[in-house]
Image: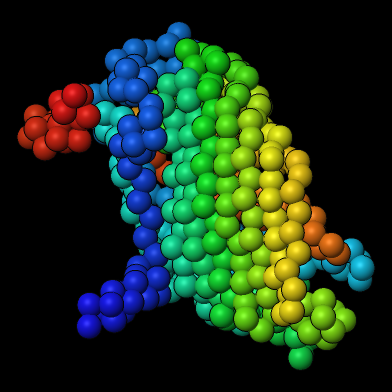
Length: 357
């Protein structure tokens, strides 16, 4: 009885409650960033950026998350891109004293049915920016995919080839040290809790680890596009290694900004493919790509910006196939900041992590 109730609640959450939560500074403690780094962001202003220590940063935003995977069939010279039918979400959020909370929901009026099937998913992407650090955590579980190219593999050229029972899992983390954190703030670009007023850049270096896979009992590729015996029903991967990159913010007339970040790595990697009657695997070295882009306008009271985070995880080739995971999150933010009044401040002070240290 307990197990069946748990399965029911899990399915209800995946079907109905596509919420996203970001408790950024709290996660930074869980993943080993010392309290001095977090508090330094709210106690000091840089000559290059300003921190809104005593102001409440509020936001309304739209966002979409996705985890796609690409398959390259080297024998047939055919590329396949599988996408989930993830939702465009509308959300509200706030940032105060280093803590950020966001809540969003994929309303039906934003997501009309266009013949791509339905997807159930829990996609937790957390991007954490303490001073001198960049941290990303991915916990992604999807069910239900379709081929992005209309008509490919489908019985009708106007339909999408759908795999409603296909499951995709990706779990991973990226941790990087920001060498010039006194001059450049990614919180200004991503969270808008700070204001970058001068151009600056910094090198990045760290580690990353990823694992996961995809499975479909009836085979992943369309049967009429692969020869008998070549259609696999599952693949799994695991990889880890050091990375390095660079981030730069260009500030124009103090208010307009363009921030770009790129990093790559060198992984020790494992990948396996399960066919109906055999299993193949490989060990080797490969590299991934992590890109971030932010463009907008920032000021003391309000901000508007768009941002995009793109994480491309390349899998080792096994026999005739090369696979890749692409994870993305793009958002448009409308920000307004205001000074907290004496009636509201005692309640918001419960969110101040300093009082618990």
